[in-house]
Length: 275
Image (tube, rainbow, N blue to C red; front, side, top):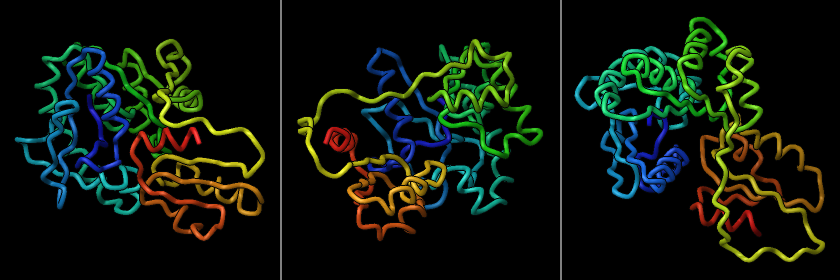
């Protein structure tokens, strides 16, 4: 697996769903390695994960550190520090060179996000002849519509055996950029959720309308829109579970009907969904 986001320590929520997907593949009997950009600064000594996929912190030999990865995510990081974009291409060259060695011995390359890891995977797939699956967790960012990024996205989609989109909305955005000629191998496959019951179902009756938001607190998730929509509504209570750079909660946290829990374990999220 190639990914630009992954937990850097046991209690790190960032990229946790990528780890979860790797764990699911392991449960299906697959051997999984995940190539993660080696962090810089205070996070330069990441952890080992004996229960999860084997982590390759790359590059481990070649020099290279990029300011755009981890922390708040690539898009947010580049908005805060546009010059960080200059560090990403040389970093990806070093990352790809070391990932190539591992790719020669794998059966399939699975890349998370079309950019940048989908593009890295497309190059590795072409060189090694291995099949490539790209997971599009979101639509291409606005900058991807500019050359040469748009050509890179189209090349990636064309090289991939499958581009798996997490929703129909993401699929429409991807096809809008890459063209209708990719309809057959650009498909929707929702991430899903563990359906095992973890709490007693609530009793049906009258009372407040309970809403639950769970996810990273970044503007693209639309939490600020949800908060504005219920601000003047009575009988509505919104529970927020998640962390992030997230201005929406900080700017609207005074709302009486808002309950903010911060980061939560998966079992706690499931329990909140049921109650």
